[in-house]
Length: 310
Image (tube, rainbow, N blue to C red):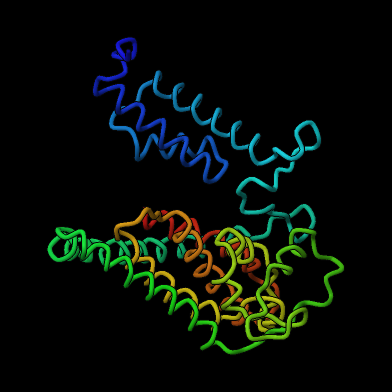
């Protein structure tokens, strides 16, 4: 009998379960319990209370503990591997103990924030019009919803395969990595040699499309930038060729009859936009070291576009 659980069947408790579930979902996806609680506060709860705060916190911590246990199942009492949890990588200073950016660059970060907001506004407006069209022409029929999923899947697959073919350029893998961190060296191993000589070259666009999204985000955040020299990095043309089709496909895909989200697409597209912004600044500067590395601008772009879309 479920009579003993009748206290949990009222509307308030149901809403609290939804909020706790939202916190647990973000925690399991990103390994961020505090972020999950804050997301639940903003998006998942219609009314927030101290009681709900403790419930969401407890739920998020249990979720993180379970995730940590499952991910490290092979080590048990050995040393836990934190890299198995979702992470954007370790951000280190490139100049000793100093920050990677100057105070005056905050104005540029504000500009990126404004542009990210505009990108998010365009995305939301386009997706809203597309959703209204779907409600009138697609959603009333299960057959049409199924065919829409098939068509969008074919479109995304085709564009994702054609883009690296259009790029059709091979970049040499970095050879002098003596002062590179282990994190950067692992990211180099994840580069994709699509239509290139394996072990010596890689395709810049394919490395952003054919890898896992979290790996592509790390590459945009942590690969070193050398200004006008595109060696061992992503060039402006490759970032532009990736950014526009990717965010356009995200606009079309979000809202079809499959489970999907916006966190990772907004972070990845924003990171590409921010790195493109930083890369262009380095070109204007002729590699004089005036601006922060492009990875810092990629991080700002990711935050800006995520804020604009959300």
